[in-house]
Amino acid sequence: MSPADPDNTNEAARLTQQLIDHGYTKRQIARMLGRDASLVSQFFTKGKGAAFVNALRQVVRAVRGGERDTEALGAVAQENVQRRRTRTGQKARVRGKDVVGAPGESMAGRAGKQAIRSGASHLAPVVHETGRAGGRLAFTVRMKADQYTMSAGSTEDSPGLRRGFVPRADGTEERTYGSASTGGFDAAEWSQRVADHHGDVTEAMKAWLVETGRAVEDADIQYLEVRAWVPPQQQ
Image 1 (cartoon, rainbow, N blue to C red):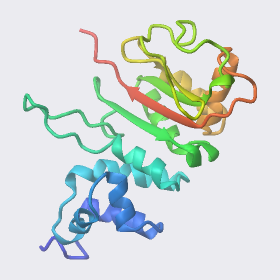
Image 2 (cartoon, helix red, strand yellow; image 1 turned 90 degrees about the horizontal axis):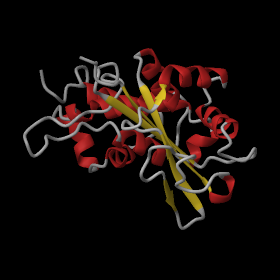
Image 3 (cartoon, helix red, strand yellow; image 1 turned 60 degrees about the vertical axis):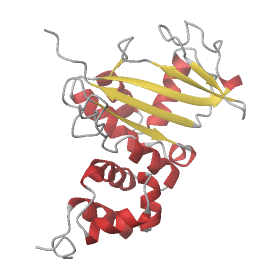
Image 4 (cartoon, rainbow, N blue to C red; image 1 turned 45 degrees about the horizontal axis):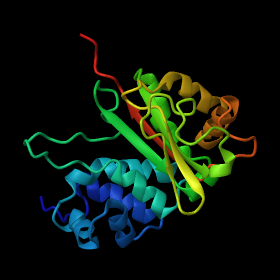
C-alpha cells in the first residue's frame, strides 16, 4: 500500500482533508501547526504526520464547533502538538482529548477575539470532558484593565498565585485564576455553569467574574484560555 494512495490516506491526511473541505489551504493548516506547508503535503504523499494527529483532531473539532479564526485555531493546534522527548529521554506530555481522562494528564484550549464573539464554543468540550473525568480547571482572562474591580495581582483576586496578572501595552490585562499548585476549580461545577449558558464559555466566565466581584457588569472578555487536568490518584 502506498502512503500516497488516495483511498488509503493516513489519519493526518484525512483530518487535513476535512479542514481543506472547510475552506482552509494547506499553507494555513501548516501555520496552525507551526510547520512548513511542504510537511503538510507529505501527510498525503509520504504518510507523515502522526505527531500532529491529535492537534489536527482538536482543530477539526473546533471548526465543527463554529470556530473560523485561523489565529484561534492555531492556538488550539499548538496546545496539542505532540511534544518531543525531554533531555532525559522521556516522552513529553501531550495535551488533548485522548489523555485528559488519565490521572496526571492535561489538555487546554484558547479563544481569541473571533472565537470570543461566538462564545468560544470549542472550549466547551474541554470543560465538559474534564468534568466527566473528575478533573480540575484553571483559566486565563484578558480584559481592559478598568473592567476588573480588584487590584491587579491581589491575593483576593487570584489567591495563591505568585504571578496572577500580566499588564499589556494595549491597556488590557491577563489574569490567571486557578492552577495545579492551588488545586484549580472543580471541572464538574464549571461544566454545569457552561451548560447553564448553553455552551457559551465566554458568558459563563463573564458571569463568574461578575458574581464573584472581580469584574464590572458590562465586562468585555477579549481572550480566554482554559487549562484542564486530572490530578494524580492519591496513594
